[in-house]
Image 1 (cartoon, rainbow, N blue to C red):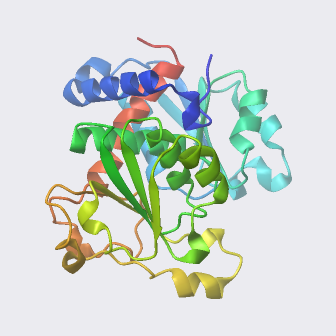
Image 2 (image 1 turned 120 degrees about the vertical axis):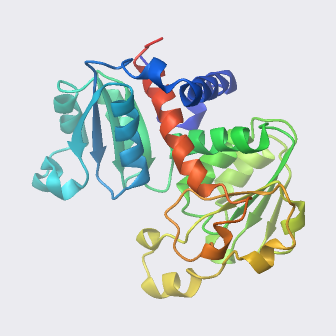
Length: 304
């Protein structure tokens, strides 16, 4: 049995295999409609979520399985003081596989150490979000037809953005990748990401505050929101939340085949006038997420 806590838990070959299965699901949905018949997925969401929780539920339902769980800590026994370990031990008796999102870093790892069934990390604080990274990787593969030889711009909250940290970790394993890290100084990428991932693997990167400076060089632009829930000081949030706004005017400087991505939810960082641009991939990205999660569920349940 295997869990998915960190994107590094998967080899590049395993990622490639998951993408191939997801692509086959897209083409042959009926073939997979009863693969998880009789199986149950538990979604334990201690933090708010729309896309991640519902895409997991949709994934399991489309595989013919069933879903149970809760969507906030207040509606679970955590409100009474129950530990994650005890919750996992109990839910493991009800479900075949568990998806957990929690505000504390390391919570999914603790859950995996106590679980008798596979655990999927759906986000632990500002640390990891591996299934969003799988969503990002299948989006890049579907839209750019490759996972190497790419100039990737990542813009916005690079300090607290767990999707950013996971994506850099994953893409650093592919050939000829260059990162453009676009953020205000208060939200710069953490030093441990630069030291332990980028510099350790000799991945070239540029840090800048200007979204337009290198826009014409990019193959992918990965926008992120400034996350209010990660700030201790509301004044800092208000000052930084609209630091970057991508609009049609700025996109005049970009390549015709640029792929614009966003883990969503969007606030103001991408203007709605970009939505109809052929380069906007963020809504397709959300849809691809369901298919890659279907593939992951099958893998962890060891269903062919």
